[in-house]
Image (cartoon, rainbow, N blue to C red):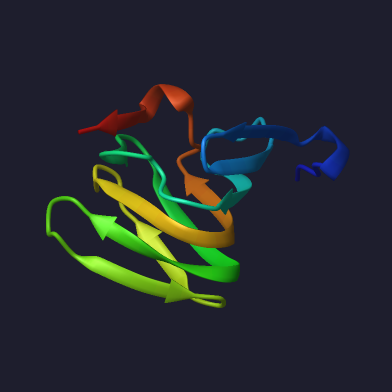
Length: 114
């Protein structure tokens, strides 16, 4: 078992997004809470080359854009989105989401694309 107090969480922010990462020693899964308040990324798309992300929309709403399929997904509070590894996506909206990733998310496997 591992217990992570909120006080140990690491805050980060960027242009249109912020988050709280809960540091874990487990390489199989990790957890964050993210907030998006505009398009993310600002241009292009992003991809995780090694992990799946599961988003539970805590509050707000938005749109997810999938690069490979040109799909546009509208989501709202209470919805769940599963993003598989190597899926290129972007968000737009104003929402907060709980996000476990498996295997554990790392910045090294996260890429931004045109």
